[in-house]
Image (cartoon, rainbow, N blue to C red):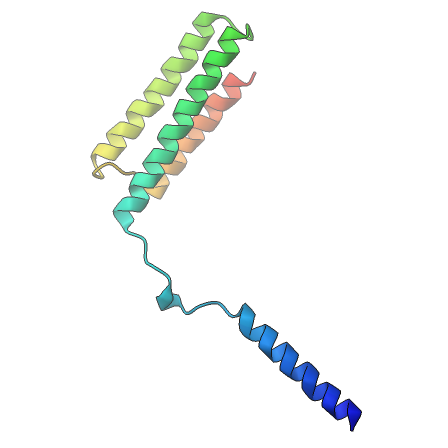
Length: 116
């Protein structure tokens, strides 16, 4: 008898815990605005370019490489920034996921050059 009561109690506890883990229905999640997502992608790329530019300045000021090398790295970043802005013009201020991946690949190679 006690085993039956304990088993029923455990089942009730497990089922109440399982109810807490269930995800909300798909319709309850807000659908993001595609334009806002595209603008956020552009802002992420632009922010990364700004951070890398500051990193170049710090490394030049600390003497890791001479100013002409820093200038060349800044020109690479400016070319990527120009490319990002050109892409954003065609999408009302945002970029697609594929465009973001392309720009991030270019920024990754520039980041390797900065950290040498």
